[in-house]
Structure formats: structure tokens, C-alpha cells
Amino acid sequence: MNEAKFTVSGLRGIWGESLTALVAERYTASFACLIAKRHGKRVLVGRDARTSGPALRDSVVKVLSESGFDVTDIGIAPTPTVLYLVRSEHYDGAVMITASHNPIEYNGLKFVTEQAMFTNESEVAEISAHLGEKISSETVGSVTVDEMLPFKHTDHIFKNIDGGKIQAKKFKVVLDTINSTGAITTPTLLQDLGCEVTLLNGTPDGNFAHEAEPLPQNLTALGAKVRETGADIGFAQDPDADRLVICDETGTIISEEYT
Image (cartoon, rainbow, N blue to C red; front, side, top):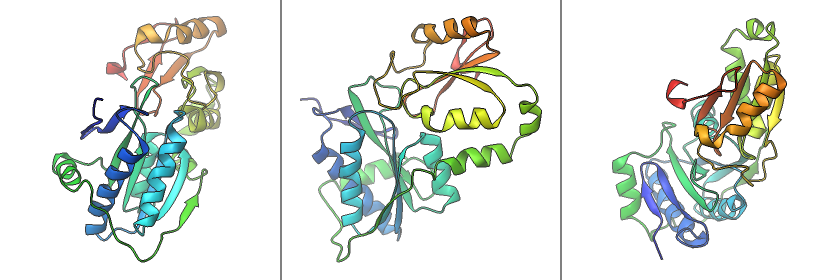
């Protein structure tokens, strides 16, 4: 069996094969040791909508709370939102459960430090070196579920742009969230900006409607819907909503290299 890969991009593997609950627990326990050395107490946990997400979430939360950390579970949330909340709400670290744009059978863990940054090469090496270790805590940390916390990110965005100028345009927008994370907060942001939103693949159940990577050849339905509805613009996000692709008013998919 192939082993899960662990790099600066996080831990990633095929769920039930190279990535299991036990593997996730071992890496989370080692990450907990890293955070504890920095005297951390509060850790955030988010996930994308993959069907393996809840099982991984349970493993991650269990290890963190048994290590003495107070855990906030924000449910399905974009990766950039997790990073934002670590910084704005002063968390000591986070675990984002996602395999990003990888196929549906994959999942993974992205570890975030108190600096609201993914673990760097030296931190990855430290986590790897301490696999098998865990914190012996006399107390179990609290676990809080707060699925409204991600909307602090959309509120922050709205406060820092000229929302009125966008609202006045009454843009027609088609949004493809691939039945994953973007379906939670992105429609709210667009509606707050006065957009008329047509949502494609907007049920966050992890059943991806097309290949996960937002390449032009995987977004033909978005282009067709933009043309059909006469929309001004189309947007597509990947499963953890950290990649954005634009579709112009003709239905042409613009490479994310230009986003």
C-alpha cells in the first residue's frame, strides 16, 4: 500500500488506503506537540465537503482535545477562511481537512501555525520526526462547534471594498462550487454585493459534479450556463475554495493564471 504524502502542502492520501483515521491521528498528535512547544491552547478545525471529512474531523478533534487543546470546529469552510480566522481570532493553530483539487477519493490535512501560515519545511520535518509521540494531558480540552464563524471572513471582505459601487451594477453571476466548500459562504458574499446568483453544483455534499481541478476542460457546464442565462461573469472554485477561475460573458473560461 502506498503511504500518504506529507509535504509543505500538507498530508494527502487516498482515504481508507494510504490515509486512514490512525494515520491522521498520528500526524495530528505530532502537530499538537509542535503547537504545545509554542505554548498554544486554542486550535481551529475546518474541512471541505468530501464525504470522508466527518470521519477525519472526528479523529483530529479527538486527538487535539485529548492533548488538552480547546478546539473550535467551524465545519465546512474555505481554506483561506481558516487562515484568516487563525489571524483575526488569535488561534494558536489550525487543521484544515482537505485534499484541495485532488480527485474525490483523496483527502488530507493542512496544518496551520499561529502565524496563519501553513507549516514550512522545517516544521514539516519536525512533525515527521516526532511521529508516534503525543501529549500526556491531565485535562481534556473543550470542543465548540461554530459554523457561523466563517461568515466573519465575508463580513471582513465586504467592509474593505466599495460594496455600493458593485451593488449598483446588479451583476448576473453564475457560480460553480463543485458541490463543496464554496457553496457555504461564496453565494452569501455575492448576494451581499447585489448580484443575481445562479448556483451550479451548490449542494455541499462532496459529490463532485466534475473533475476537481478547475481547468477549462472541466468547466464546460459553467460556460454553457453563462451563455444560457446571459450572465455578466462566471466563477468556479475548487473543493476547498482556495482556487478561483473566471468565465467571461461569452462563456469562455479564463485560465486561473490570470485570476
